[in-house]
Image (cartoon, rainbow, N blue to C red):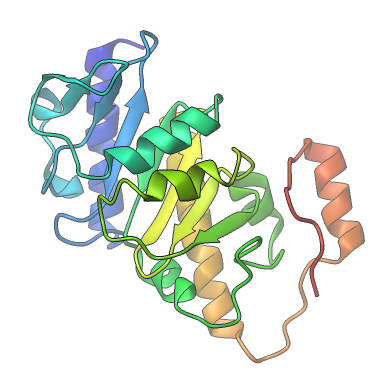
Length: 219
């Protein structure tokens, strides 16, 4: 796919996420890794609903700005996830309401922030790690992401929001949406003793779809 088409795709998906209320105002950012090792990334303080393809930040493989507007302050976050997940070609970071709310609950397991509630959560988002709070743009978040050793494609930043990698922009967006909907289910069903997928059902999904789940146990 040409760079022109990729720029248009970032803007199209960004607008879709914005219009459905998944990332308000100028929050959230999207990046896409190019064949030459460089990136396209949304600019700082840009609304995902009103992106201009020509003004997207074009970075080289070292993160140096080549063209476009100043990039998002979350470059360290994206960089660490690309560094540790070689298969990642795109990353979506949102401030979606239910995922953010989930990060504030005291019972959340940092190794598996959500239980195995639905097959598509596991198939698209895998399992989700929770990392401690860092202020937006804090370079220290890179150490937290590196500490996950590339085992997770979906990560929740405490009191901040989800960051999700995919092998394509479409995959990253779909996984982010699945994570948000699963967080919503968890909040609706919290303290109602819901029935989760059993270990045998999870094992069947792992075998059938070749899932890589870093943490298997659940209550």
